[in-house]
Length: 411
Ligand SMILES: Cc1ncc(COP(=O)(O)O)c(C=O)c1O
Image (tube, rainbow, N blue to C red; front, side, top):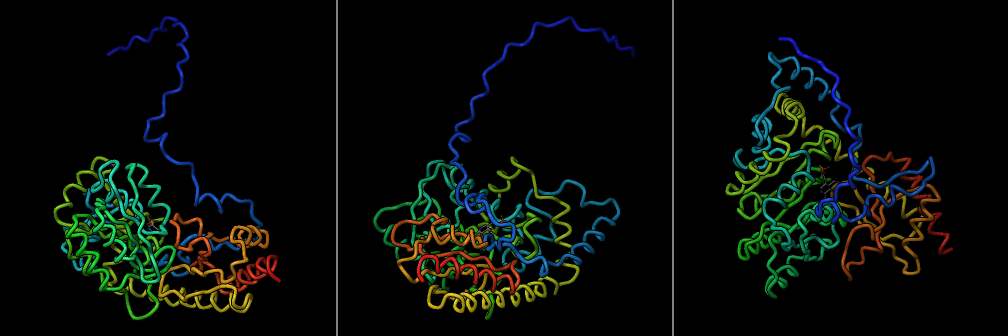
């Protein structure tokens, strides 16, 4: 066939059109705050950053992942480079299902914890619906909730996690949330863990009043002693979506997590997901699945090293703060996770000024006020100090810098 390539006739220049209107969904998003704020501040080049819940690269299974990748890519036909099922690949789902003690059909692989949360919200919250949330709260959840234009019902979080009694009062008063969001283990930021009895009561309330618990559990595996609190009450209820991630255990860059969903929601969530990105990376799933199943001890061995390292760092930081600024911080050694949540003991200390002076001294952390909270939580009198990725000498130095910043306000 011959193609006749002719010069097209000259066209009049197209009129300049006004820029397209931003859809209401985009226009309604709030300006970045929170995560941006400490991160955008000018800081010293030698600043020690105690900002995010970042795992230490030394306790991530890098060489085992490299070997698993080579094996996966060496398979005939290289299935890891092909499309796969929306709910995730079988070996990985089966491994997770066994660890969670649930049927494999209830496990859906996600691109990490935050993705699991957005899927869960979209699946159970009507636009403009009411969602009960931790108070104070992990701010990213609220940002995600903006997409649903949801109303928020804050429920206080204390040293033993969510105040289930306060939630019960609000429900008795007539509040009817579609969902309740909480971080049950090593809460971010306050570090409390919800005890078994309160979990059971929370599930009972969800079943009585017909809401879905969004149990967001990224720190669960990072307990320091005695094992984690049981999730049986969550995983055996039709009223819970249990959200988890490999971010804190195998590395956030994998962007890999999972949700355990009630049977009756599994199809809806898969249908929703199939209209978004189809599925998580087959390659990443295959590599992590290979890592976890080829050597059944590798995950727990990785976690064992991580727990010992983080406990040591938590202890170092608590002791260093007390040495550098005796009595200034009320610190509770956390039972797990990656954060310390000390409270400023002296009411004369201005918490915002302390953050600015600390930055000038070369230490960056999240102020308690960075975490949205209602009145009465006292969150603004706290600091959230992330210790997971910071070496012991650096933690000592960070505490010394914090001590110097404090002494600018009280001698
Ligand atoms: C409470 C909480 N939920 C969810 C996430 C998000 O996890 P991911 O990085 O897997 O999306 C984090 C991460 O810091 C978190 O602290």
